[in-house]
Length: 218
Length: 241
Image (cartoon, rainbow over all chains, first blue to last red):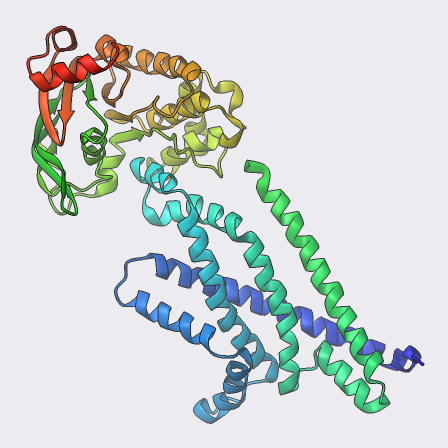
């Protein structure tokens, strides 16, 4: 009843598709962390101009569907700027911008959860704020929200399958092509699902390893 | 060295410091006592601007630190604080806790900072634990490290905010012993404490506060033997000295 052997000719294609998924996840997680980091620092600052801007940014990216953001960036960028954005670029950009909003909220929560005494101790020794936030507050904040951050990258990995709708040759796109060619939907999609599952498990494993590492100070 | 004049501070509608006047001389140990909520800690925290007073002045060597343009970090590194709840940096080892501010604020090299840190860590008896994280230390050990951390900044005045109040009784002595050693070194100190016996022993001056007012000041022997004000008499009658 199952004929997984029909997939054999397409396995090299699968490996490049998986690589696209991995690359995509890594780059957008990286962008998301950088953006989230900056947004979180703005959110806890007292800058009267930047704080509302950051709040607005976060509410827009959390308040609209990722798929809409993706399509908007992919299809509207050429119209507005004349620049023909590639599907991969559009994907990475929209996912990075989107996850920045979520990561910044997680980080902000983490920063606020750091004991006020840590701030006071650093201040009372004359350490400038920008220094101790980097050296004392953020390391503890990241530790506090590490599970949330790992969840965010897992979500990014899974949501990366959305880019197949704009034609990026990722893992889901591969399955879609195979089922169109071989009329074997189950085999194609179950393999894609298994590949995603394996990657998520790998991330989970990395996550718990990192968590253990950072708990040395507990 | 430090002059506090007409100092006042509000938290919302609550007036926590009312027209406080006192002076702290170089090399003296000044102790502030009084019931909970009397404003002792707030006064102490004003001295290194962890709290910003609303009125009055605080001068360090004649210079008002409340004037605009005074860099807040420059004051704080001269008046380092030891907290009731220790507040050791949780993500740093004992040695890192002590060397961090000297490196960042006083621009010491790692080597210089460590050498200096070891001097103070030995003094507080924590030289054996330099690579431990705070979570592995007892309360008394944490507080001793916190004292070394403050001392490593070579502050002109050491501020101690109820340094033994969060400790288990059997650890109070080890911390008081360390503080007593420091008083013998001639370090200027402002101490907020409920340890009356200790206050009487080490202080040059006692300030008694209640409800935001500085009620009575004097030398410890006279204050504890015959307080001048009725309020201080009642306070002393209610505690075991």
